Image (cartoon, rainbow, N blue to C red; front, side, top):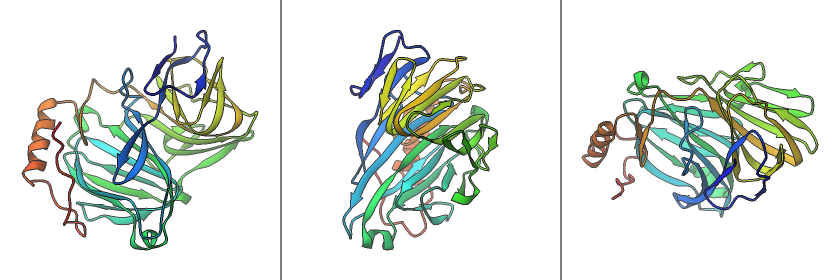
Length: 306
């Protein structure tokens, strides 16, 4: 049985649709004056494989002189993954990293024992304004690797492998799928794929991962007796062949992997297998014990009250 989660999904579903376990609709949230669609975590479904957070950023337009301003904030025990379809974000972190991410590239930041970063529009992008559109994910780390040294890796668009499967274009953004291996490697077994399916064409999901999901960025797809439209995520049952057919030109993001080694606790920007570790991180941020972000030291997001 399919269990819609979040806001009412813009989809048509038959109760005997096979394969789909849950449909999750994006819920609107504000980050730094910019609206995102929050998909994971959701009531009834906290994670898909190691993916514990899924935000659809935009699409949204900035007037000239305006831009994104996500002030410095901390993370622990997770990795953040940023991918843009349109626009630009300037990333800075407490390791001294400072660069702009643009469409097609991947930023993978492993927080490990603790990192601070900010995400803003760069000076030139702010001056000209324009559209921002993309996906940001969090990947929870295996328990034995939660406290690794923090790191940041930028992978340019040309380093990301892609191929055509009949009429469908796929890019393997992280992990392995469809006979391709991305240079973006996680700390657990996973896949992250962008797929563009023209109307009438079909794509079969990777079948060698126990947990899988497909998010519709735009367009609409048919899976068994379900018609699922943009801003909805389908989470699938284990072991079944999942075949997606585009009812109209569809842009999808596919995620999945092995289930994590136990539940994770989430508070604000902190994720950990140990609730006491989150309490330590809260105290450290409150007491200004995290390292600063070079070039962005004047502001910070305060610890929320709840």
